[in-house]
Length: 83
Image (cartoon, rainbow, N blue to C red; front, side, top):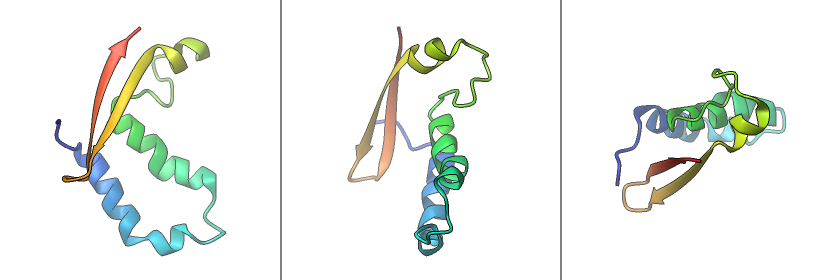
């Protein structure tokens, strides 16, 4: 299994340190996406901001990603296949 990218480790640690504030109702979904979800997928090589400028349908469905979590190491591995 591949090693966990540093950015994902950093995101997980940050989330763990501040989990109580993230559970508050004032912490919005948009903030969660900006601070964690988009950076998570970018660390896996996804172009979440469509910097490549592909048409939306192509940008969203041009790759198939398989993400697996190893319960022993708590790390994530990915594999990509271009369609």
